[in-house]
Length: 205
Length: 205
Image (cartoon, rainbow over all chains, first blue to last red; front, top):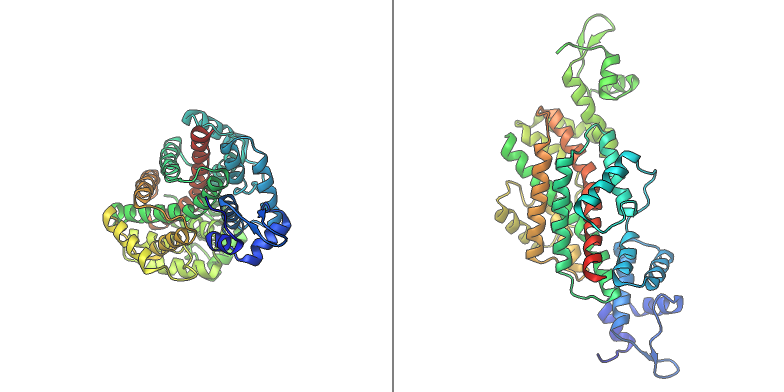
């Protein structure tokens, strides 16, 4: 791949030149290869990192300080999947209050049953347990049978997501995970609402 | 069904007596059957309406003014499914800017293909078209194939949701739709994130 000047880097990444200079000063973007006192050339890894920063800032809404932490933590992870998991986990806020033991146990059983290689007490597992608690509190608990349908359906979606991933570099895959997760959630939510209305119309009218 | 005093209505609905009195004064809750100058008896329809108001206020986060509009519009709808659809539609905010024609057309095709009896230009369809626009803008458009997987998966979830609905009265079904939709969205989101991490771990580590 031919290295590029900053103007091309800006065009390819969609990030304005002054912003790129700011990220370089802040150490979020590694320096290019110096070709003189004031000029440097950049590679594909710079394009990918800029796209990832852009996704974290503009789509995930993270502060620059948080982006710095996520990138540093990602860069320290030894494997690709751990690096992506790191960026991904940062998308879920910590629950306001810890979930109940009952829901935690239910999530742990579900993870074992689905043979998912995830920590049931991790950020997403906690979010799930808290969501189950909220349904219990509203007097509308979700049954094991319904939950099993959710597991199968979301697994099918996740598989389609991963199948469509092209770039398997660390930054490329992390950007894909962040953008894909956050931007397809509204797609999933809107489709489910439409599917519900369709069925309500067919069954109840 | 035996009618009940206000204390029992409060217990059954989970709404405090002063709040019930406020809803009565505001006309959100129809009056009970008067049994004297200051006493009245209430029925199951009062329990259901209170649960629906509670769901709209506490779970959907609507203002009382908006709740009043939703209830009035619901009560005017001639059929049960239209009444539920009304409450359901109110959960989706109008998009900040109208979606592109390209995405609108894509949604219309999708609705026709899935034979869904929904208005592709309705609130949920607009939300979907806007979500597709956001993915295009992020340089990560969703393919027709992936979108088809989303359609099948969300239809399976919606079917499981409706299968678990017990109460088919107007207010009962509307409360079920509001609570079910809003509280199970975090379940769906958390599960998808877990499923993605599982697959990333299996395929990329």
